[in-house]
Figure 1: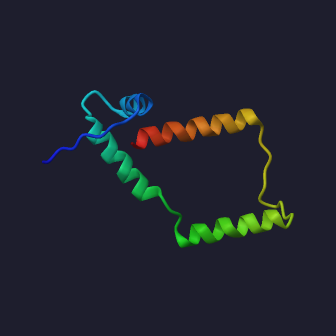
Figure 2: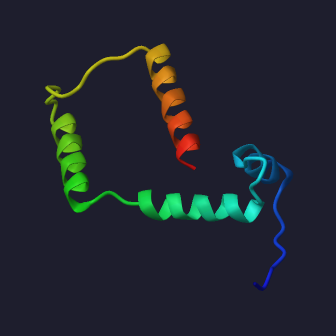
Length: 89
């Protein structure tokens, strides 16, 4: 395998290090990130249509599918999603 050297910032290095297990190389981590990105980068046509319809409904004042949450609940949901994403990688 031919290798290349790339320059990354210390912050990027630290972030990659956090995503790596003890046996992982940075190449392993980057490969997983690329795979995850490719698998999750776009909505399906059906998902895009659904979200566009929901946005249109919201903009028209139709709040039937809208629920209110606190900032604490939002923070908790974001934390759970971040954990899920890190676990999938």
